[in-house]
Length: 489
Image (cartoon, rainbow, N blue to C red; front, side, top):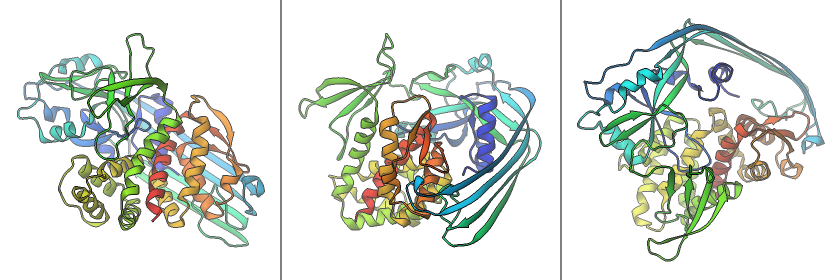
């Protein structure tokens, strides 16, 4: 389940700010999302979006001294009360696809009252920064961002807590029978008889903590920098003179010969959200446009398949090193991010521990010119970073239980028929895919799906497709596919 901090912030942002107000997920990161803070984002996939990563610099740190600091506007106070009382009973049997023989009652109570204010930079005041000049020489972190191909954003509004607040979360389970309840994902082990477990969590959030934020894209041109006012802008941060399209051409060993040119906005708007599929006529630079196709599950499947192909060319001992190193890092998001930063810069630096072992294997690519392991690991890391901390923990359990293949097939069975639907639609989990997942394995799998945003029913395999679940489910599919490939050693 999401942390108290993340859950409250998500509910508050949804109720008060709409889709453009982004909740802060981790309390330790809250101070990095204040006004003018610069955030970066990059992605190797068309199917999931990386979370915003603070670079720990502000916009004013990269502009020359002649740039004036726009005044902020404080709005508020506002009061937001979040209360949840949930009581669910379940008697699970063959209807859930497995013989579990369990019954129980789950209760959860969450309460919080927030007094908040908005500190923003209105759009008219942002215009004073248009065409401002960058520092000379250019800050080194900007060179790194350009090298990675990042897009950069500037925080223009922060929702802050006015008073120190204590968040409360109480939950408990009263069960009888075997303890194999798929919806109580924090249950471990099996036993008989009646068991009552309760958990109470409190979190003190200090005054001034940023709970949510809005951002605008930063565009850097040769003559200076612009802050885009429109959230719909499709430009790149680092301008190269090519607008309105994103070119993805295969490069290096293991790249797909089927390359894609994604049209984000044609003049008549007709090609938005479609992909041109191209294939080289020969080994020259000539490309032939084959067709225009909508992006569907087959495109995701092809993308993942091409990322998996280089792994098949690696020795099994390398598979084992990568698999166990990733397993050791899954519960440490900071370690995953540090490895991703190192790989994105293609740095010859050093890391300790499991990240260092993976980096050593990547640096062996010079001896394996037919394998581009760096891009494969980057793709996997980016998919992992889309998942929540709870999912990373459940994924580690899945690796230990050797149930990745069954989980991948289950996720595919959800994505494939529902990928095209932009609205909520009921569907049923296929019982034959649930049958191999028994007891705790089923609990872990339900937890992974629930964290993606699927609305699961306790007493049956019925669920509801939600468009918001599409991105995390796609990242989960890519993750399970690559990890299963590594596990087959």
